Amino acid sequence: MNSNRCDPIVLPPPIVLTAEDIIKARIRATEERYADALANAVCPDGARLIPLRPPLRLPSRFIHCEVFAIVDEEDYERLSIHRWRAWLAPGRKCTRAVTSTEIASTHQMSRMVMNVNHRYLHVHHVNRNTVDNRKVNLKVMTGEEHRELHRQE
Image (cartoon, rainbow, N blue to C red):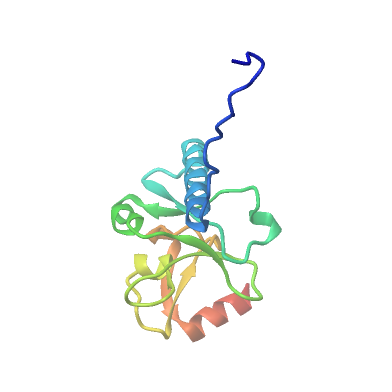
């Protein structure tokens, strides 16, 4: 028997990642990042923060930041069951919190908080922070009233 002979090396089978595996890994990493940011976030008394996933069209200002919506404690349980994401209206600079429901393909958090289902009613954010969805910051008005209010500002 030849003592200089080596046994063949057996390599493990290659790891094959599917697109689904990669997406799940990215979601896990994002959720861990949001959990860290949420632990360090500051929230007004009597309110809770709901993390928003990044918008589908990702502008540069969203690359390294976590976005949260502020809601009243009483609305938190009802709203936190949805998967919320930041949404940028085309041609506008404000960010809104939206989700998909059985009622509508895109539903704004502020409209859910105020129970507004009529398309001609608008929800105005008094402090102009469109992710602050506490009832004290929201006011329901007609579209005409809302446009007039913003023209005056």
